[in-house]
Length: 236
Image (cartoon, rainbow, N blue to C red):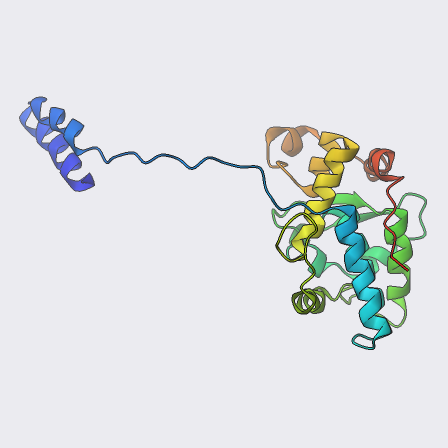
């Protein structure tokens, strides 16, 4: 079809006869109906995240994972839920030194390097107090240049556990921590600019490329204005 249409246009130009172009009408491909777009059915709630934390605790008590993996998985869940960072593009690349230098500060933020982000952008994201408390035990006996989270082990553990989402028949996956952060942000009416910056949504536009460059303390202040009262609890 494309060749025939191009050939007719060429003949029309070559012969100076526009009648050949008229045949283009009969060579158009039929247009199919576009499928209707729906709101995502994948919902990650506070109860879902707390269920993951509870399962981590139970598997440790049953001896299926040791204390080191328990602390790491627990910290990873808190981190993912409160920061919404991409599991493979960012979380799995973070180093011990990035957290160790921040946890004792009044306003802790992590400076994400361009090579640790999907869109190669350097930015800051704040650490909620629950995240700070969860990552502190991960420093013991660890080198500064080590990866802080056991992301791949956590993904394998989730596949084995098959934890079902409460509002969906699907099983919980690492990406649902990012979904929780996004969806909880809507409930909290999280400032759109602050959310887009921390989650790196739509930051390749003119605003962020040439005008917006928030300081770390301001990123932290705005974030905590909305997230300070969020409290994820592990079921006893």
